[in-house]
Length: 317
Image (cartoon, rainbow, N blue to C red):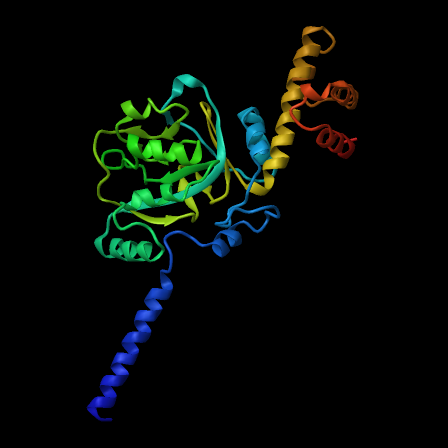
């Protein structure tokens, strides 16, 4: 074999190897098809990026449920690792609940060679070269989104946002953040009306020695695996991450559980039922009385629609 043919073969092999490497790392922000493949149980409307679109009305109802009841609903469906507590809240004094559709971001310790791959890939996707990569997820937010990031627990130098980016997040999403990491300039962030965050801490340092590796891919937040399009329930008592396709059922069952709780206490105070009765599984007779009570409630006293209530009662005769 002459030298010319040998050289051509060598360059052909290099081109093939280069193409194979490129094929292995195609995206920073996951595409619609990939996100849909992560959430096949969802049968409803989707956002343009492929995430499930859980309705605003359902997100609003979710705000008013009791965390314990929602957690119990998740356990019923074998989702045993959806709760994360021990957060620092940016506004712990406001006792507010935040719900929304999750946008995920994964950060890792900086590595120059992989970081360059990320930079080139992100620019090819249309992310701004002038913007640091921690801004890329913020550029993609829309109303109702909650920015959830795994910052691998880094505090000093792990500050994913300051007050300027917090303002941008709120203007786009009307929500806050959940960071397995930290923020900076919390003194100014606290001044943003309506914004809140569940974080591990704050630090005056700027972000350093970190790189964004994915947007809208599965991430880990503490003890929880979080998917893009999950719905988050963030309260002063901890956070829950709910699979989108179960949100409707879990919200309805949590609402029924809360009504049952209130009804049992009412019957106990009236002297009709004992403490032991309301603190254990209802007997068939107690259940019938509770369901009769629900049927008599006016529509404006119910957290769910009359149609949903009737369907529930018919299914639990």
